[in-house]
Length: 133
Figure (spheres, rainbow, N blue to C red):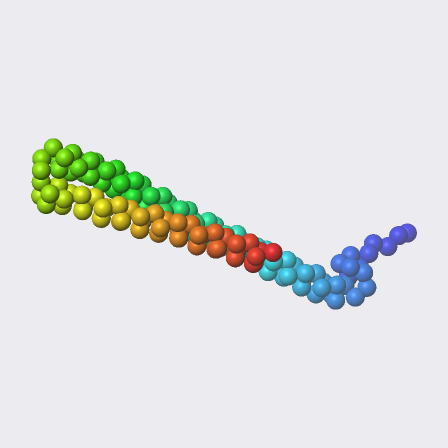
């Protein structure tokens, strides 16, 4: 008649307690790896959200710059036409043209800031990919 294996043999053969400890340590290591992967994924999600916010802010600055440029062009054209039709060298037309020039300067600053944000974003993405490798 065949004998059924004892519980210590079923766990991993003779010395089943040692094999059980080894299995526990492997299970612990697996759990730690799983937590590390979850933490990495959570960090990536946070970074992705930060990237999206940076891009949205840069796009908004570009839209504002476009609006200011359009308004500056309209004011500049109106002031130029007014000074052409009326001989007003230093009247309100000159003030409007100066304001238009200042709006264009502010637009340029916004576009530069948007480009800087995108450049910084590229640097962050490169650093992240280097860390992952």
